[in-house]
Image (tube, rainbow, N blue to C red; front, side, top):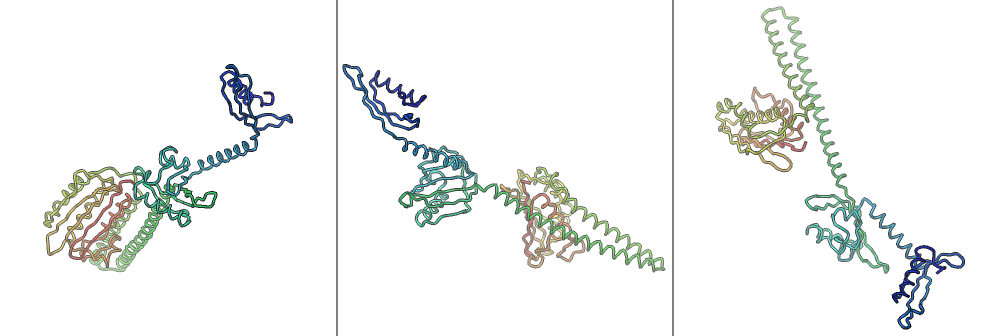
Length: 435
């Protein structure tokens, strides 16, 4: 007993020795002894009592030196624990599959993603864990890796689980046994959903920045051109006035100056509206009933519609709601319906059809007419330009479509056009419900 290490080992030997004598129980335990030289070594001791007349009179046993074996096993356990800790700490989903694509090892990342315990995952394949289509794709990849020894490195994949889609950067490499034969594969998946979202946000930001930059350049050209034209007009009229002696002619020039002044004020007002739209875009949106707003605008246009015998077909449901600035919504509806009447065909009465469709992304408002139409091959890239007109009408200013496009884009939406000459035009307005 004195050779047993004091503490756990000595207490354990005392306990099993006592049970062998009192209860006639054999024993087989591992303990640490201290040698004559003071070295500690693991040993395995076995023993069984020799019974005489119902009493234990002797104990027969063995002591086997297992120190090297025990230290090797301890080292293996330590390495396994280190490896498990390392794999569980990785920001990856790590798994090992056998030749049938059944999972034989998973880390905490994989368990957390599947929201299952290790025991619920081990022995299961992808058909047990995901939908059939995704499982088929995964199995095909597994066979490619294991049969052809072709690793898959950094492949962008996605998995939909419980209605949520997660994007991964996935790698799969063949796993070999001690004999060098393929026994499965090791898989690692990095969740890049946040990165994909940031990438989409960055792309959207680049698009918005590019669009805003283009609008700024266009706006600067418009300002420069229009103000220069007005300035040149004023300069010439003032020159004429200064040199003119005839009173009647001077009054005519003064009248022209007043008209030029009014035109300049109108231009400045138009430019101010555009600036105002692009600097007040996020604080004015609120939920609006689309049909109610359409009905109100139609009432405001009732005289114009009646004068032109225009027929309105309003298919918008009572329940459709858009997140929009009230003034912008009225402006959008008013301009599109007014244009449909203004550019009616001389060969038929105007028919204007209004539809709305709601989806997860937002609301699509469509306003169609049977009017003159627009030659998109010729004017497609100019339709929403400032002061761009496409029909020979004296009252056409080419500002309405430019204005509503800025209003729509300021609210995160978009507008497109479909048109055919002498058949009609459809404007599609997409209201973004998120921003």
